[in-house]
Image (cartoon, rainbow, N blue to C red; front, side):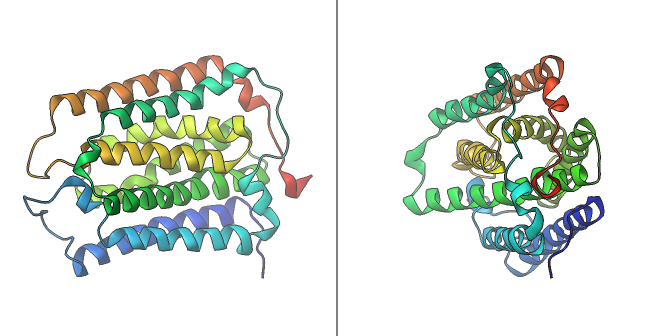
Length: 267
């Protein structure tokens, strides 16, 4: 049975993902040694590519099934914009700024500290996270809001709030609540990436590329040690730069919200 994608069903998918992420995170922490403080000699990356990453990959399979089968009638909407928009080429600068920061981050990574297996697992994890969060926030949710007749700028705000909430599960692992504010900045540029390149796959690729770089950047350091100033400075600088880019989009790029789409399934 194929369901209709609307605001209610989209929010149910969001709720399912939030609950499943928290439950799986707790189960992994309790039964697979993730509970309590990490061993002093564990690298930061080890806590990300442990047994919990397989649950993340499993969730990707579930969400792809939901997108292509459960909401089959809206699957084209979820992954593609309905039409090409006649926008200034300057709009491409917003997602390209995101990509540029990730490229610079890669040049700061000490690749000699990682094995080939480490790199493969980090890439797989980043791809899975990109698939999960983009399908939920800028795929199912965005299209559900559109199909409910919500104005594009309002749909964008909803996806931004939900994208931040998706990272609540990070707090279980001791993450800072400031992360919720940081990901809101990224959520804006990932939204622009979908609209400019006319496909959710662009946002997924951007998301995975960025996460790979920023997992590897501090990942070689021990959890018991403070990060070097150069890493902390780069992380802060990258966030401030992308924050400025996001603000510039809101000031200069608002025409994108006027280029609304009713979606393939409503055409």
